[in-house]
Length: 259
Length: 271
Image (cartoon, rainbow over the protein chains, first blue to last red):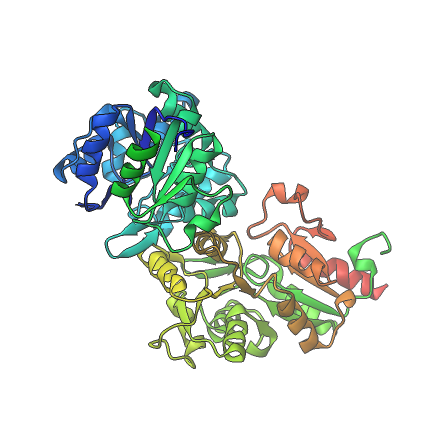
């Protein structure tokens, strides 16, 4: 299409879009290489809160993706920035691997609660401790509020469910720092020297990825892998800019019509 | 509605919450709230009809009554309305097979159902230590397999007091599942209208002649008020000072404890 405006930046979701746990989406490694031949303005934006930046990059490199640490912008980074800005000592409902991103932040005598995807913390005892801190007036920070995610054995509960529960119990709204918050996408675009209209987001989460990005003026491509379920594309208005079978198909479309 | 005090109207029946009004639960069982044992006796002796409306779902009604009798309370199983029997009625009426996310103590209430069969609904109670990622995720998946998902929640309380500390009640876990599955739970127990009305019907008292005494401002007081009863808030159990200025619920009265409520009620009747 001749009138199509050219895009200058590509944001790509990780889990469910280019890989599921330790397996790459078929064709995704090669597709990323083809994309890099056309543009270097790429950022991987992720709500995967179980893993620190280092863990994340090591896993991606182990399954064949060539990704630099400064190309990753995660919701954990956003949460860490937020905690520092507020000057809080967080109780971290995070897996040990994710706590690494907070290792130089004091967590003694906590005065705020940070919730990520943390199966080990989602037990009655720990949730009660977090609940009491919040009820006493300390802030609740959610890495993100995803309802569920795709695991190799099927869909699994995301941290959003537990955040919602804590919000209900305390009457306090969480400050959400990850996708699909506007602030998250604005922060991610900061170093990409382009306006939102010149950027695209590719992801498997119709609300978190596609709608979140489209809300600030970016284009959103939905891929039918990962957590995608039939009919997801009809859940948002306006609809996704494009709906693609998988990441390689999304890259084909970008190369053909948008870049 | 005439202005004035709640005890100025003709009260023929009283619904009493149990935990936080009669006694405080602890790991060792429980401790009666001072004056409550006598208050129940005085209320019954006065001829005012009494029923007990609890959202307790960690044990059967029989176990609860046994425990309260040991503590010194005068009450019997038929006087107690609890969510588990209400849930069972609903399951039977709709021909549903439950997946249970409940505390083991309440399981005997569900013995009429084939728990090995493929579930057609989920029933959630105050499962306490049973709530963890595995059990919640398993329940989430069961709901996803249903079309549409049917979630039944035995109460939706936010928290309660246990052994001096506030503990999460079933509500936050129900809300977690509702959010993840995008469904709305059917609530049995307080504040479900049918629950209050069932207890009133059992004692043959009209809503305008009845009062609910509870420590949960939303589910006890607010729930009863929505059914046309008066709602009385005690300053025991899970009560917090912020409840005095609750954004949604304005009780018909505040009392220090159940004994105080019964004093006011009986003084007025004697006039």
